Length: 173
Length: 463
Image 1 (cartoon, chains in turn blue, green):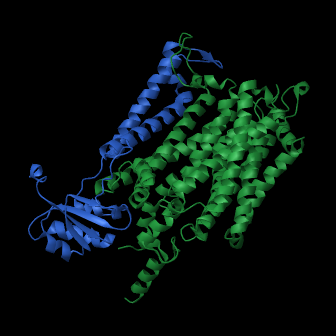
Image 2: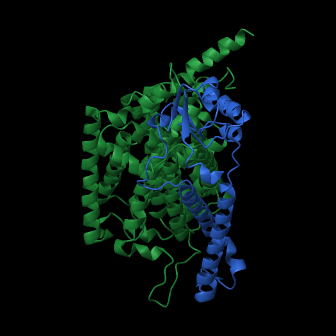
Image 3: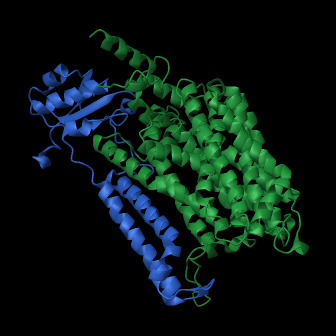
């Protein structure tokens, strides 16, 4: 079914209120129609659940990136301070990494945060297809102001269902 | 479904709709700059250029043109560095800590506070950079292989921790800020009529479309970034304080420094946010969004952190006496009664006494008074750093090397230049960026808007 959606014309319904949108999404899905996308000017709480979206796993990715950053920091401090050129600084010789670890805590922490934050944001930009100069992904400019758009493949009885759900404007693309 | 206790005062005043919020936030971008903006911008630019000149002179001649001497090796520049970094703390505190605590009043002020953070950390970075003397070798602070048989940087040194802390803080603050800006830039893009403006905001908005999945990820990313930024912001000034605390200088070598510096940083940062936002709300007519209640909340934070700072000062004095260490005792006696007594008592008056006036509700909801206190607090916090740095150094263990410090015109020029640079950036930001996180603000309109709240309460009373 997924490969055939290209040929199916899209229907775009506009809503003017976030509460109406949520109940509309629930109604439309309960009536058996498939929603392909919803565009909103701000994060509407509960919309992802109403649409049946899976939970985002980006926090798990951030945790992994943080562990990676910590590993990099451990490797860096071990190699530079203990392995490659150990020095006796302030009467505290760098004999092994574990004994010197307390002095490296700030570095370990900062690099963990650095890697977790930056790699997570890069991931976020990539999976959302966001980059400088990308074309606007919303078909109607009013959806960044105060309109909410539901986009779904045309089907029999859909227009009536949308009208009943409180759409203020319905257009076929 | 949108409900908030009637005990809570509305955060958005007047009869606003989603569209009205858009209009109000975008107005400074779409309309011509007011005359006052041009006047302020010109002054800031002249100050900035003076700073550029002073820096050029420093680099060309060497830091001998500063007022430093062999006893006082850190003074004006490090004072300014710590002062600017401290100011930078409020932005992340507002956007990250208050997000974790679900404080909705942060939404009207977080964008500007974060902008202030980024701009002030940029100023802060300039001072250690140029203090190095040979600024073209500044990259030596990074752990990169080199031709000296790979002699690495010293990871045991707090000064190097500082490099990592400040650069992590600056870059993470920038991405945190920008992630929030993307949807708002998209709003400006979608409204723009002028093709050049439209194109610029198209580039800035990264093609944002407000898809449901994107918003879901947006919220998760914001939450995780807030979780990361909260310990980060506390670590930055902790590490700055360790530059001093790990030394053996009396007056510096104290374990109270990390919490004391962090409280002072939040204190001065909120004061700077007040200074800037009181102007922004007036000039751009944002009084309905940045309400008296917001100002009062920030004043309470100033009062609490100011009191923490006061307790820290007194604890320091007590511990100096209680330690029985002669040098430590003298360091504090010299601060209060020595040749720099005026700096010490300026600090005490501005930081300990003045925020206590905020106990009065009448005073802390008074805009003119708040503005004055916000300036006084920042003067006081500048003196705090000056007192800690200069009075601890100028009379060391050997009386024959005691000396005084006074800044040269070059150092003053650099400091004035950073103030100019800061305001140049902030003024440009205020005219081209959405100064309120409008997408976020729209999520609380139904719960915290004045009219919406009233409607809900009246409706609820009928049942």
